[in-house]
Length: 70
Image 1 (tube, rainbow, N blue to C red):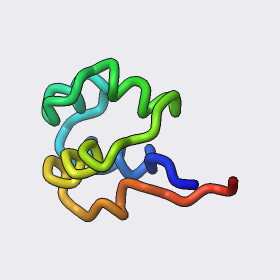
Image 2: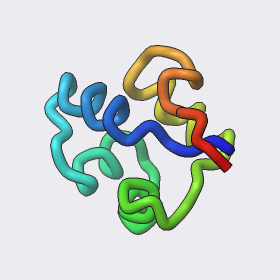
Image 3: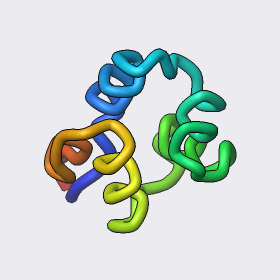
């Protein structure tokens, strides 16, 4: 299974001055509720979301996902 690598997202966002879910949502253009669900592990990111994070904060899609035990 795969999920959002929250720590890497927070680090990349923090490098740009985005330390809250609201700031991440504002910079990425994604809904604040969607970012909240991702950060609280209530949702898994779609490919489109990962591409937005990659475009906004740099790196690769792989930087924002992590493999978990099933």
